[in-house]
Image 1 (cartoon, rainbow, N blue to C red):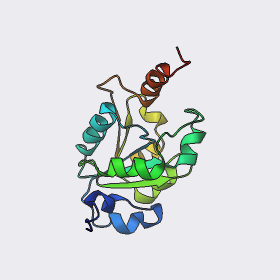
Image 2: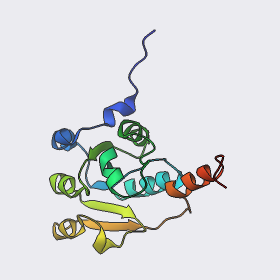
Image 3: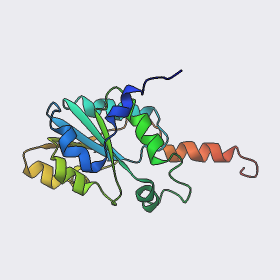
Length: 167
């Protein structure tokens, strides 16, 4: 038996198709980015809050090579880009998922010119990549405070502590 392709797969968008795909999206457009390696309550809360700031939410994921350059650990990301993208795309609040191989999403931000730029509360607004350009265009930038004390790094530390020979 053949099964239909899941609808969330249609939310996956290579960077070179972004402008074409976004042309019909409702504005204001919200943009955020990250590794989103092991999805937890903090991630989904943050993404839902980000979406509430506009009509459409674009999430740009670091590629696997980009995540490795972030210094999160030699075994990161745990989940490869295709898996991370599919999980994020499956969230109702997410309109489109793309990715970038650079160290920052600056090129994507300048390409799509979102009206709203968002990062998590560990980022000061003046340190958010693309904030100056977004503000100069009349957009807004938000640093959304964390509501839950969760992190992928802490989860991995807990898992590793239960492995034989680690504690």
